[in-house]
Image (cartoon, rainbow, N blue to C red; front, top):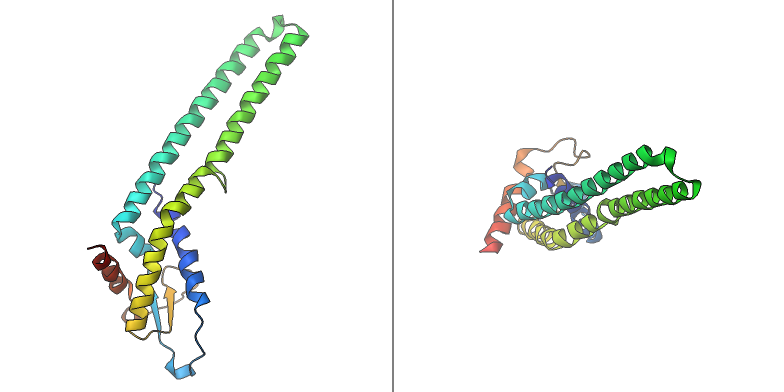
Length: 182
């Protein structure tokens, strides 16, 4: 599973919210210049986005592997319990059922801790993406200022219904980002 989608979806809100915070005085309707940038293309083209994708994928796979081990242990213990259930005393049965519940709770807690909304993977994604977001945001701002654009929209957003290629500054922003690396 590739995390470009995750990298992309986590990149968009910050760039857009940062653009919204810098509100300039309203320009006359005829003077507003609008440009678009394809953030999805930018993310696919930047080497650090691919590196972030790899890191997130590797970490997620390690977490999935551990979950698989948890699940296998739970299934093995449940199968053993079912085989011995008929010969167990009520106290032994209750104790084994409690152990199985605890194991299941540990499995679910691990899953939430690693993959949950505020889980380790989400925190790692946020930490890795923050510097990239700031670079993209700054490059967009610089290109927009140099070329006198008042508004920059994300072309890959479903709210952009149409945009002519001549107002697309994606590759100028990408060029700015790549030149900034050297």
